[in-house]
Image 1 (cartoon, helix red, strand yellow):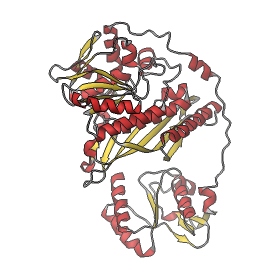
Image 2 (cartoon, one colour):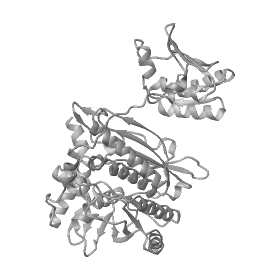
Image 3 (cartoon, one colour):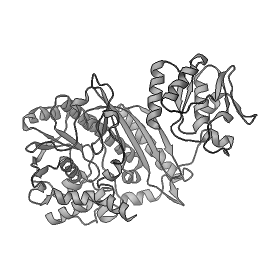
Image 4 (cartoon, helix red, strand yellow):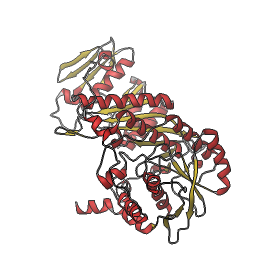
Length: 499
């Protein structure tokens, strides 16, 4: 239904039949009617008895506030109504006249012959009550941040490292999600050029020029609990980085801010800090917030969810044929790491999966570096330097290598720097990092881009052949890709089969 509504709306736009239109999202009809009336220069009269209902017992308040999906409200001149309705019938979209623009400056809504709303629309759309809820940094925040990872046992041998990797790739957050995503058509009408499991989704929107858009959504709620301000910026940085990794230029964001009860001053503090972090981060990156939503009261009894400020970033690419996919493309190509690895494992997937631990300080976020890294990735894409690019996030370098290798069944031989701590390099979740693969002939141009933008570049190894493919970390372990794939793919099907 959503696809039909979109196509119907696009044809209506193309025919020039509407004077105004708005989707019915939060607060349903009450929001759409007041905002449309407020944006115009007249009033509006609505008859709720004409609104199609799934449940005829709904009260007027429920009809106005319902957030049923796949609905739009359009303002259509009388002379265009029949043509408008004809297009809706063509797409099998139910369309009903429920009111009209009226003289004056009032929004009037009737139900069963009684006027239930009679207000200036601007008082609803723009002059609603402002909550001044109390908020306060909770006392337990210091305890959470002081509960670092120093006491957690780290793998010390190659065998322990490989066992850790297998446990992590099979964990709920890091395992293969295709059991879910393969149930949906990701390639409607053939214009999806990147889709799960790539870092960003990408759609071609102009077949002639190849113009496209890329989108990515991200959030690590564990980081947001440790520091809501930094956690929100880390979510923004990761989504921004994922769009740039595809070769698109990040331009704008939306958000979905999910928290517990705002009546709890500690939760309200988390929300306030996350909003402040996003605002500061968007100013630093130059990405306006185009919209979003807030979801409160996400809790069971007195136990709230982790603060979860999800950020979506939209980018534009002038030609989708120069997109950068995430999987290793060919044996013999070199693998490089962009960005700096630090000992940052608090709130990490390793701490969660191996030790069921959540405490300490989240990784540092450097938004100036994120912009510089994005510049490298976008320019490298335009010059055709990269065969693949994949950002480092949950699970760190180990997870990124696994996902890049499994994409096309190619192996990798990794030689960590001589002074590197193998555990930190494999599992740290330092922000602002991406692994890329490329033909060795492209190295000089990539190195020049990195120098110009102040981005650290480290050679990690080489992509190996598909036959008997493995992930080898020299001097530590060698894991056959078949064994890694078994651990990675088995988790969700096993759970769904038993339930």
